[in-house]
Image (cartoon, rainbow, N blue to C red; front, side, top):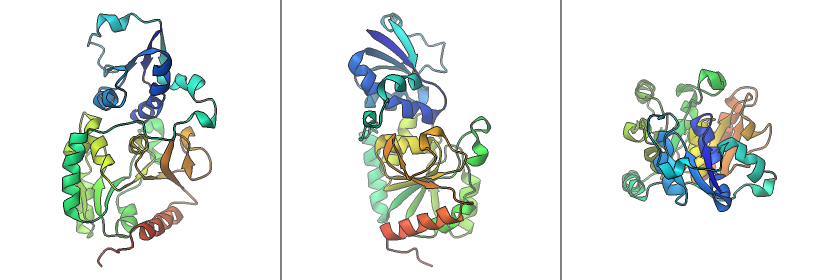
Length: 271
């Protein structure tokens, strides 16, 4: 049986639901349509599946053989068949970053001789409750000052102004635009995969880190997405994620992250 699986919703949703592609590909011959930004990453991660990055590129014609199918289904609907109980969720990464890009980042990060921590402080759009899913970089100053690390911006929009202002406050955070402001999320995946840790708001980077199996601490607002549940610090979709929930504002969660950082990296930032 040949099936078209077509992606839906935002970039993070596409990544999340793609975790079920290996399941459905065991039962069917799959043609997977996704956002063009994810096509290269998905092609490598799911080598037995034909991937088309044509979700918003409808003028691009598919191979005639891939247009002759028996059925089609939205990627989120796969959960009705492959995520019916807790045991159905994978306990291992399902995305594979580009090994050549990873080597490039590894060489750079090894030269820093300190932990490399990726950070993203905004998520979503007005339609997806971005007002609940964003902080200013300045609000994260206590975290950025907690340990001596090479901090890397994982913002998908240009954060040049905020990063420049942070440097004036004595905080060194680097933005690599060719890896984050890119039409190919494969660039971002390699960067994230070579970070030692990711700290982010509820955003697509959390899904990417989870799919790669990267340690990721996610700041989860009270008004949150259904995947993150209403309580607890774990996410059934991604075992590598640790959820830090908003608790009467962000001061307590921030302090919790600072303690976690100090426990993980005992070498403090120079005053």
